[in-house]
Amino acid sequence: MKSRTSLPAVFLAPPLAILAVLAFVPTAYAIYISFRDRELSRPDGSFVGLQNYLDLFSDRRFINAVGVSLTWEVLTVTLTLLVAIALGILLFEFASSRMRGVMTLLFLVPVILPRVSAAFVWKFAFHPLYGIVTYPYKAITGQPLDLLSSPATALMTVALVDVWQWGLFFAVIVLKLLETLPPQPFEAARLDHARPWEVYAYVALPMLKAPLISLAFIKMIESLRAFDLIYVMTRGGPGIATETLDMYAFSQGFIESGRISYASGMAVLMMLATTVIFTVIWKRVKP
Amino acid sequence: MSVSRFLGRSVLYLAAFSAVFPMVWTVINAFKNRVDIVTPTPLFIFTPTLDNFAYVLGRESVATGLVNSLIAAGGSVLIGALLGLPAAYAIARYPNRWSADIQFFVLSLRFLPPVAVAIPLMVIWLDLGFYDTRLSLILTYTLLTLATVIWLGVPAFAQVPKEVEEAARVDGYGPYAVFLRVALPIAARSLIGAVAFAFVLVWNEFLIALMLTTSDAKTLPIVASELTQLGRDVPWGILNASVVLLSIPPLLLVGILSGLLNNAFRRNSK
Image (cartoon, rainbow over all chains, first blue to last red; front, side):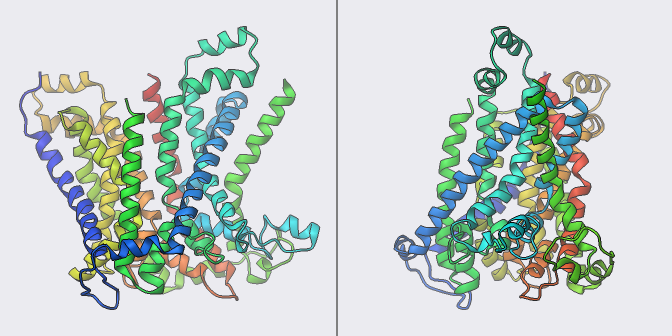
């Protein structure tokens, strides 16, 4: 049996206290300023109650940002998982163990890159005149292809970079998950003359249901951090076609008007939505 | 059968190519003169130049950004490791009725949208007079590193065989000595991975640094992004060089991080 010791208290109290202060103070402060009309140029401001929140719901740019953010979440989470599962299965099926090792290392490169780097690398690759990705199109049609300046394609193009970073990384995880499965169900399915895709669709993936849901959950959280990519690649443009909630909150709070309180109101709503949604999902997923 | 094998492998090679080529292309461009970049057809053969790197490394803003990044990331990772590793050990080895709640609390910090943390913190640091300082950046980043180190450290300590710790206890080691001399060295490999991950996370961090700094404490990602926003006559070579510089530290850690991944799954399959 364990003897009584001070270790847990000594080891846990300081870090948890620091985390609590660093997390709760900003949260409480965000709520506090969201009830005022503070601006960057006017530090005091007065109490305005729910005015900021009421304004938000009649702000069409805010409604647009909610839509862009939701589209972004759905796009990136779905595409990342599809890419990851497809490539993970291909790795498991066709790659020798040495090839798996090399591929694992290569597939980790995009996700490790700073988002600013990834964003710039692809922004330049998609450059209508000098980009290497748009070059074939330009060479064949003679027309420059400007994906990032068209409202119809800009968000999708930025999403591709996100999927490039996370899809390849998650493919490695799917491979590792497949490697942990016992071989017997696979053999049994093959003896029953299941085709290879049937083995994965009806045997392997259902066995991995729980970890795959966790992966989707992680990606949902990480997709909230779209800001860096969008800031470098489009700055929310063209117009407001790629303006997500964090991009809009940033430009309200800093660039355009310095309306700190208004931006805080947005931040509080985001915090409320994500915390509630993710807590509910997490408690559902975890037994 | 061999056709599908050929197709499958081709897709994999293509994916691997797409993973690495964009960065390779950036490195190539970093050694080009501007005239070799702004060509209608992408050039693979050209006379390499070191001018871009010389320019980037000679710029004061880049040098300051580099130092700021190293201090902010280094400082917050150090605090995160010093406080987070013991906390992770305590959660892994001394479970109590709050353990699950503590772990959930640490995880839930990740649910907070960065912009929601950055806006109030900016106001707080402004009011306290610490806005645009390295100190405020280190403290803010500690929220990230501490949570990450705890989150990844708990499974690493849980992996240490309990028998070894029991044996050390029988040999007369106290609980603190068991942690320092037994658990820490045995779990070291996974823990280094966890700390490396925390470092990459804050090294790459952008939004918070953008909001909490304006000039003195700007980190390298901010400096690099400012270069990418330059007007029409974009100095592409210099941009590519600064992106390469920014990406080197995380890329150096890719081996350690893939080791962390391997360890994590070796444990699960046991």
